[in-house]
Image 1 (tube, rainbow, N blue to C red):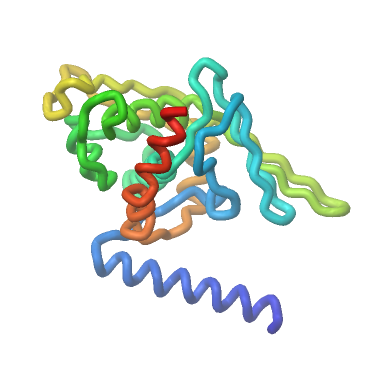
Image 2: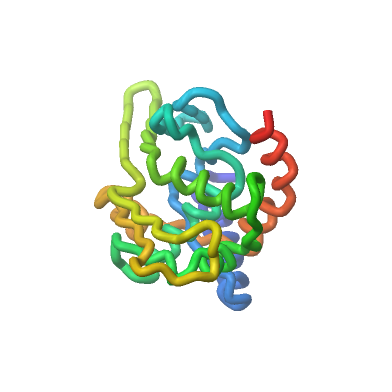
Length: 212
């Protein structure tokens, strides 16, 4: 099959999936780079992670005192950030008045304790929002490098012990200008139902990794 025919089939399949998700009220978006190489599925030692997919390489770096993002929660967060950026056309995003409301929007049930979803979400938010991403495309005579910081500034004012409480200050994210432009110029549609499902299947595995 010719390459142009394959590309046409892929485009049509994505359009059908997006239309079905929109009808179900579950249409979201995800950053283009993360459709080519995903974030770590499990806890990774150190502060650098690299995943290669053909000619494309994704590298993620984070401060060593925080660690790398991993598991399903960062993927949910990236999709939420992309969807909100596309919807609002603004690099400054409000996370909502309450922690529990934001979590329910992600498809998470707020639970407390050391291994509860509230603790896990806050940990992964810090890991993801402190990270930088470098995308490298290499072939014999061509090389392309694109580096970006996801978040320029983050303010998380929720009280984890009172997830229903509305704090005095808004919890917000300000995306870096480069990442924001990438999101609104090249968003990839995704069915949020499919994206949220793996979280519930992977919770036990993530807990095992965190307990090591």
